[in-house]
Length: 142
Image (cartoon, rainbow, N blue to C red; front, side):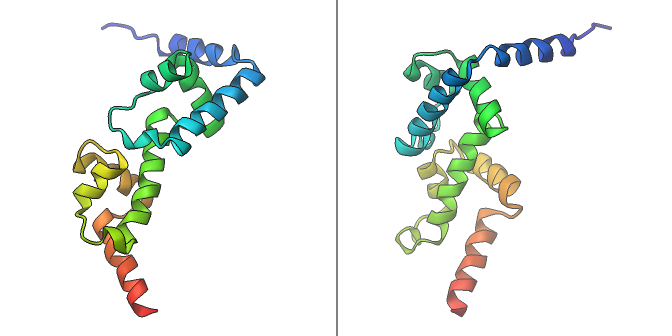
């Protein structure tokens, strides 16, 4: 049976994060926020940690380390949270009332409807369709 040295990898990754100086971490954190929130790069389904790192002139390990340290999650989780946050708004905004859930998934950056549903359910505990219906009922009662 092959042996997998999981501990060594975890220790090596943790040690790599410790090489980040606080000022470098702060600067990279600000740049990551700008790319994701201001430029809304999360809307691109192909926007990876590697592409982000290239745009920031660094490597993806530094990007991943800063995301882990500052956001306490991995890059995919962070991007999906921004996508779902925007989708929550779009699912109840009257300007998107004619959009299907699949169209909204695409607009916020998911490459397919299934990954949107999975991320949405993981974050909100209900499906996007259930959320839309609940919100419409709430708005209708007011």
